[in-house]
Every structure is written in structure tokens, then in C-alpha cells.
Length: 90
Image (cartoon, rainbow, N blue to C red; front, side, top):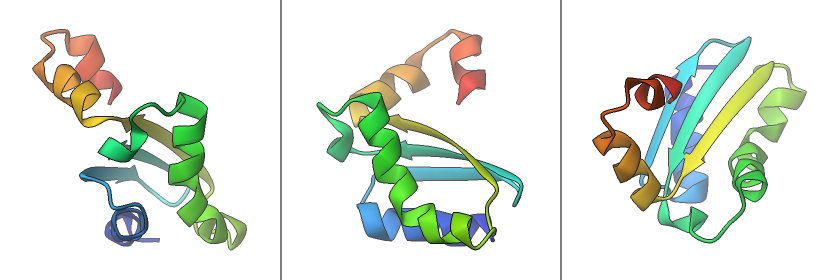
């Protein structure tokens, strides 16, 4: 599955501000940013991002997924961080 198609699917279904998808069919990494994550636990955030991918996982187009989800404020703090360890993590 093409990373751009995955990005489009998540953006369209979840109406997020930013989505980044990297990796290959065996393992993809998703960074999702949006206001919809305000006040939501990290586990629930992952479930929200994971849901549009379920069929692709069942069809074995995607093997494994790492999801990192942030509110806009959290994302701004990460991007403004001078800590290189934080930036490498995303």
C-alpha cells in the first residue's frame, strides 16, 4: 500500500491537521496531529487512527503500524523543542 494513499485515507476519514506516513508494507509509522485528540487518552488516540487501517491490515497490505498522535499544542511543543532526542522520536 502506497504511503500517500494511507495518508489520504487517514486525513479524509479523521479530518486531521497533519498526517505523516513513513515506512514500507511490512511496517509503517504514522504521525497524526489534530484537535480531535484534545482530552483523549493515548490509547484512545491510537484506536482512532488505527480504525481506518483495519481492512488493509486484514488484507495483509500492512503488517505492522506504529502510531504517534498529538494535539496541535503538543505538536508545536515538539517542533519548538531544542531536544534532538524528541525530534528523532517522531
